Length: 134
Image (cartoon, rainbow, N blue to C red; front, side):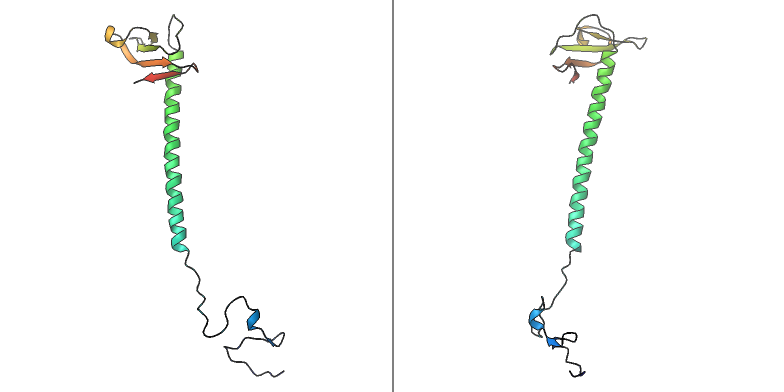
């Protein structure tokens, strides 16, 4: 075949020496729409921001749950190490006090009925876990 170069708007494959415009997966004529690359940077940035906000929010929720759990553990540890001479009944409210010698004790007497140094009011739930009564 001729080594003469074809114009740019003619789709000719030099290896097969055939016109193959109809076989291309994209438009090849001059009047075809321009092929443009879609700008995905804005979409990616929005998605990254949404993900970061979701992760930050979830992190804060987990952190708050952990802090509540640790506070519950501290109260339970304090109560179970306190002195008391009765068996607590599930669902009843009890009061935790601290003596002058830093010793803690659990009592049935409410803070407004005595002059002890009150730490807080607690209720024993069905799982044998002490919950603070606010």
